[in-house]
Image (cartoon, rainbow, N blue to C red; front, side, top):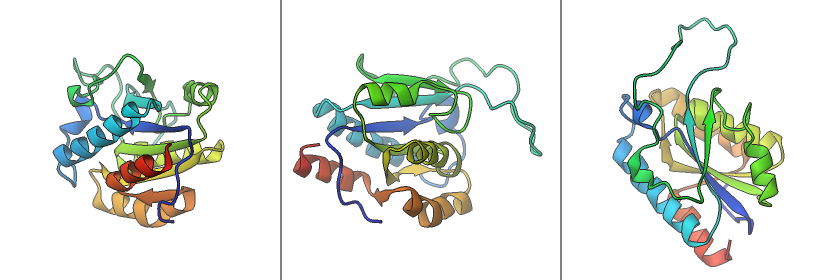
Amino acid sequence: MALTTLDPKTALIVVDLQKGIVGLPLIHPVDRIVDRTRALLGAFRKRGLPVVLVNVAGAAPGRTERPRHIGSFPDGWTDLIPELERQPGDIVVTKRTWGAFASTDLESQMKALGVTQVVVTGIATGTGVESTARQAYEIGFHVTLAVDAMTDANPEAHEYSIKHVFPKLGETGTAQDVIDLLATTGA
């Protein structure tokens, strides 16, 4: 579904733009993802809307077929990238699962602020971004995905999420679409 509206109380959720992840091989140049995210951050902050910066510092405890990182991360790996220009009013969530709502207090923080809609961006499209969007949808938030402000290491996962999953969870558009809608709707 194309982007049509933003609720008056919409939050921006930026997933896993952290030092240890932005340096991984990704299908889109990370500087473009960061630039679009910065534009979204500026638009949300200008309007006094909530900004959530998410990092990942672990993994869910379940067994998987693929080996995963166990133990501590190298120094600085979980640090949010400085280009996000973290502000005192930003909400910072550290997750240990793919999605930002599971095993964190993000839902209660959003509801306490009266948030009814979230715009989700970040890395990786097919895991952290998609899981966060799924969780937001499942607990009742309207979901918007700024598809040009996200990337993945796996082109198939990225394309599948954008073409097949995201339209079932909410509305999609570009970062500029979101910024333009913010300017015209008063959200």
